[in-house]
Amino acid sequence: MNDSATERPRTGALRARAARLPRWWALPAGAALGALAGAGYGVLHTPQYTATSYVVAVPQERADPATALGFAQAYGRVATQLAVLGDAQVAAGMSAAELQKSVQVATSPDAPMIAVSASSDRPTEAAITANAVARSLASSANHAKDSTRVKLLAFSRAVAPTEPTSLSTGVSVLVGGCAGGLLGGLALLVRPRGREEEAAGAAAVPGPASGLVRSNA
Image (cartoon, rainbow, N blue to C red; front, side, top):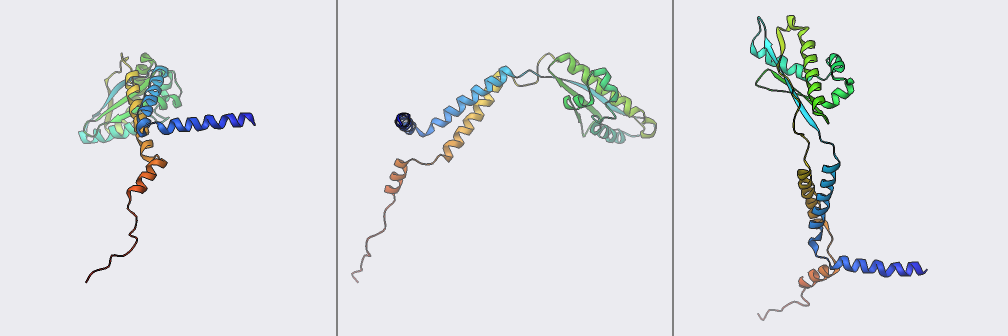
């Protein structure tokens, strides 16, 4: 009984203090919490490095550049399939599932070129993985070059990146602060009005006329 009686005044005091805070307190509070969360993410998150290898589709006899462009886009869509990643598993030292998670492939609508990008927390591993998948793709595609009249050739090998591609701590803090401020602003918009504001709003609205005004006519 004594504990309950003691907790009630404390709860009432906390509510009174919260009521005395300005309405816009949620905005800076949300920004501060978001910046703090972004700083924690930037410090604890492992930096990721990305390396990219390029493969180009070259038309052979009785083939034109448009055919090479079409096959480049087709090969880009199947570059991460299990049938293509068979040779890359040994060179990269990864399973097919791991390669599919770390590798991204992009093609261009204007050039018959395929970009194979690999991400890892180690720069050297990212370059080795990208080159392994690019070689495996070219080898798999060139098995059918006599029928497709298109050959894949290595255009540019991936090199170990010197800087991470993941967000830095400063950018994480900025993004977290902006996100927290946005959430604080939304909370401010949906926050219900207090009793004093409701009473003031009710007093500002004129009440209905008590009687009808008669005309002298």
